[in-house]
View 1 (cartoon, rainbow, N blue to C red):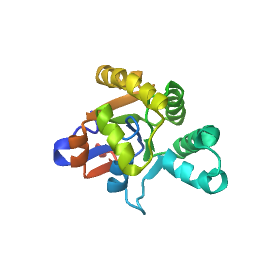
View 2 (view 1 turned 45 degrees about the horizontal axis):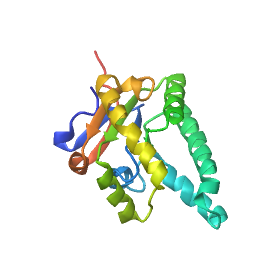
View 3 (view 1 turned 180 degrees about the vertical axis):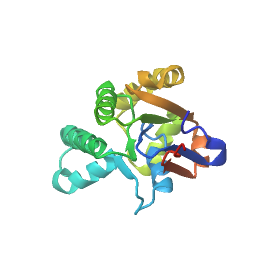
View 4 (view 1 turned 90 degrees about the horizontal axis):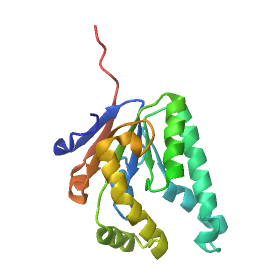
Length: 194
């Protein structure tokens, strides 16, 4: 199974992969992405926080709840376009929204790309501290929904990653400590058979 070499600090995937980095808000997804994909990386990383920051100068005077749907729409249009262009691609997504998971799976299947999951499994109280540390606290009701759905997704990933994102071929579930040990996420060309 791709992406299981956490003990070495490296997660490795085929070059044309779509990797979904999932976890409830505050789990540490953005922190991991910043560490392993610094500016100038040749891997496309899609993070809804980037989309939100782009819209903020124009709409930041309004409550975020008003323009949140626009952020999500923009982000998922970008996800579909990026998947059509091919991998490697890393998508930052909480994975608790079934529509988003189905969209990613459909787009990857249409493009003929394999999907792999990295799931950051942290307790809700740890995730809440992560939100406070970044000064971006999720609404109570929204966080409750994420936290309620998450354990079932972890269970499904262990049984069959395709139950989480349709067509997913592997899943790695990491604790916060294990995620902190990840030094690289690499994408490699398959070895030629002669």
